[in-house]
Amino acid sequence: MNSIKILYPYLGFYRDAGGEHSPLALAEELNRDRFTFEIITLEPNTSTIWTAVKNSGCTVHELDTGIPRLKEPLGMIKTIYTYYDMFRRLKPDIVQTQSGFCNQWARLAAIAARVPVVIVTVNFDEPEPNWYLRPFLRRLDRWLARGTDAYVCIASHLMEQQVPTGFRDRSVIIPQFFDLDRFLEGRSDLPAIDALTDPSRPILGFVGRLEQEKGISVAIEAMRGIVDAIPGAHLRIIGTGTLESDLKDQVAALGLTEHVDFVGHRTDVCDQMAAMDLLLIPSYNEAFGLVVLESIAAGVPLLGSRSGAFPEILEDGKYGTLADPAAPDAWATAAINLITDPSPALTKLEKARAEVLGRYTRSASVRQHADLYERLIQSPEKGS
Image 1 (spheres, rainbow, N blue to C red):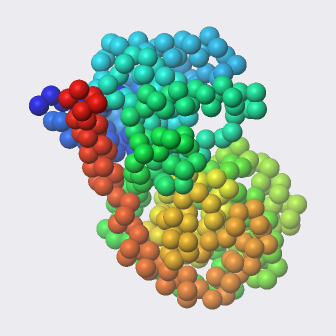
Image 2: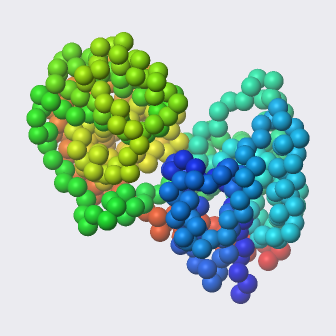
Image 3: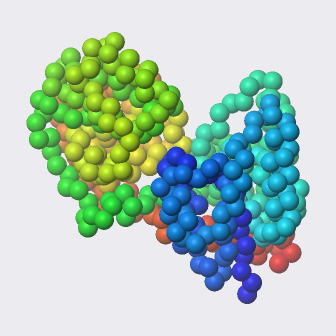
């Protein structure tokens, strides 16, 4: 039986973002007797996940062109043609795209190059384009949909929001997985689930990129109300991003300088989380949110946003507390309640440990992808 050759156009490994784990897992774990897996990247690769990709032995075609924008038509055309030429030369059986740019323009090139199977990975909420581009891009999206064999969605809400009407029967839900071994970094067991060591001095935390969609400004504003009720409360912010300076200004304006620490980027995220009493996840727009699974693994109760995949993962509050995004007063009230009476949150956390983590494993994700590849290649429509 011939090996199935898969090309995976992706922006690149440069942020250590959750989306980088998917191509890494496929590179490391797909059966190499059955599949040949190669990646194409546009951006220079610099992340720690990139190091793991290189060590996997996977072939990576590094274009290093950057991501051209629509207002750069020559760059767009050059990149699309580069994809088209590679597909014609390398003759893949399957092209699977991931990320907004690749999902549109690498997919266009794959369809034009008559690649037998084209798959799109839907792993984030695509922002609305400028009003004058919407008619063109919507028509393009529907045209591309006709040449798309499958949409891989990491959460059910993305299928409803991002897959064009009339093509959702081509969708399959393969949840974003949680790499527990990588998160534990050599630990032999999960951190203990402990009650607050000092309820008068609780340590709250935020872990993520300091960007608007993560809602960190809501957490900071909520801290004003939390500190008013519990003067010893403290917030540790782990992560970096473009809003860091603005957020520090917000902290100063709210008189919270003594109560908020900006820790920066950390690699020991499990240990950092395990030292917290409550994790705040106030994202406005989170396609999946690995941080929820990280908090469960680290043994820290969470207060999450009622948006994106959080209600799906936490089953509408069964495994963790949810609050509406962009409502700082509600976040403050919910956090104070969790701090003053942590028992219900700890009970939910113990249930989540037992019932949730096992649903989002790396091996299950790779197996579901392999099954999808086999099914599509063998479908009668492909002439097999």
